[in-house]
Length: 314
Image 1 (cartoon, one colour):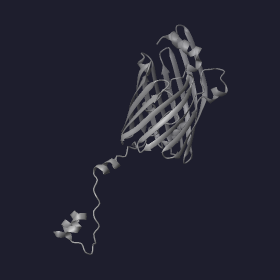
Image 2 (tube, rainbow, N blue to C red):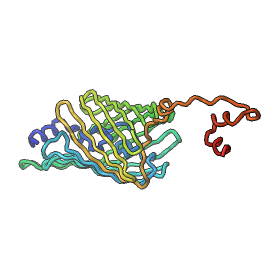
Image 3 (cartoon, rainbow, N blue to C red):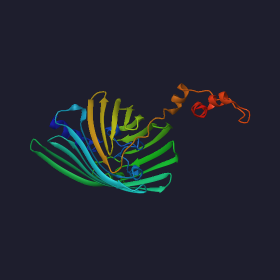
Image 4 (spheres, rainbow, N blue to C red):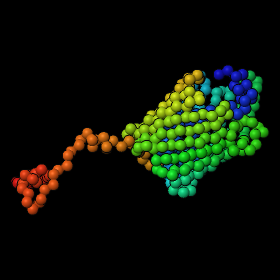
């Protein structure tokens, strides 16, 4: 990557630093979404942490837009008992000359059977070492989020990042971005979500679809309109281990491939699509006619219980 371009990008538009977010394949996009599929550990919204109800540890890696020398990754570990949860995470993005690092501590609580809330604190480190130029900058900022679940099939979410920067933008390095969204579960194992993000360069509308084809296989797909980005991911549950692979295609910057592994303290099953209705229709059996047990004969019994009548005749 051109070093001069990096320096100009960061210091002519300071909030452009930390604009790219290291995330797992299941997160689909390199920015935080207020609502998403919570079946897999999601490192974006801390309000999801109470819903996981397990110990968890995970790591992901990607090469953004397949650019030589540009890498991003994240790792996280935490615990939830179904009511309270906590998570620590570390993220890295950049090249040999330009580095962004983040250390975050998030916590969440189920404040009501249908409401969760989350908060977080993060330290952001920026370092540039190139062509005799050197600069380092660090700051601490805060996050607040909530998810409302008025019905089992409807989730509403909101997250506000960089609260300190929203109140005091003197350093101009972090943009106070936010996201709000709606997730609908029209059928078991299927989720549709819309999120609106406000980032430094403007609003981003993203749409996603999640489908769990089997108890241990799930797929995710998404589209972000303003960035003309398509993304997809496939997830495999291997007992207490979840492995995922994703690809994201930007209209101008190219493709990003990512992989992730998440370990849980409990066996992980996805809530699969319900296929029983289709099976019933395909194997439909007409109901047996009613009979009077006081007047029926052996042939009548054979119609409703062939196995039983065969035993009686023997």
